Amino acid sequence: MIINNFIKWLKRVLAAFIGLFMIAELAYWLGSRGASAGTGSGNCAVLVAGYPTNTNGSLHPMQRMRVEVGVNAYRNHACDRLIVSGAAAHNEHVEAKVMAVFARELGIPDDHLIIEDRALNTWQNISCSLPYLENYDRIFIASDNLHMHRAKRYLCRQKPLWCDRVQITGGYLPLSLTGWTVPFSLHELYSWIRDITFYESSRSGNAPFCPASH
Image (cartoon, rainbow, N blue to C red; front, top):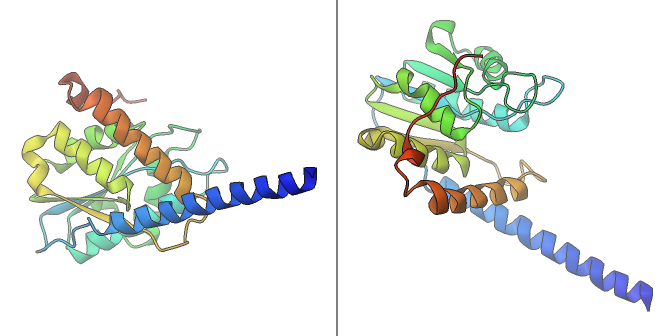
């Protein structure tokens, strides 16, 4: 009896996990449909949103994906700048510096690469990067297929007049982040609910904020 109950419980747990996994994969696929391929070339900048570096200082797979997406946009649209943004928000490793090393390996020259190393979260990724973006006709936000939408919302809230200039470019291959898509999707859902509930209706919640230099 105990064994049978345990098997039933285990089946329910597995079914729930598989359901969540499939929903997360679908969310990432649907997220890609909102990305814009963009038109034209030149006079554009690409902002690569940060993600925590591995505790040993190595590049996290999500960082790798975001930088690759950003470099592709930089090349495809003949942009003038690639901005990597992120401080040492979760460990002692500065996200932007780690991503910049990889961007250089992919061929981005130093005079086209900007390291923004103050931002501690997505809102600050936008805020701290605004001075580097203001003179461009087009702004590409590079991230994964879900996070890019939130980053664009944040830029449009901080700089409503810039919103028409913003395009999003994301990356994700089905099953390429197995084990990560469920928590990533849940976090984006939480962030969306939190923003609608607490911040989007507040003037102070829409003001840019960038921490002082460390």
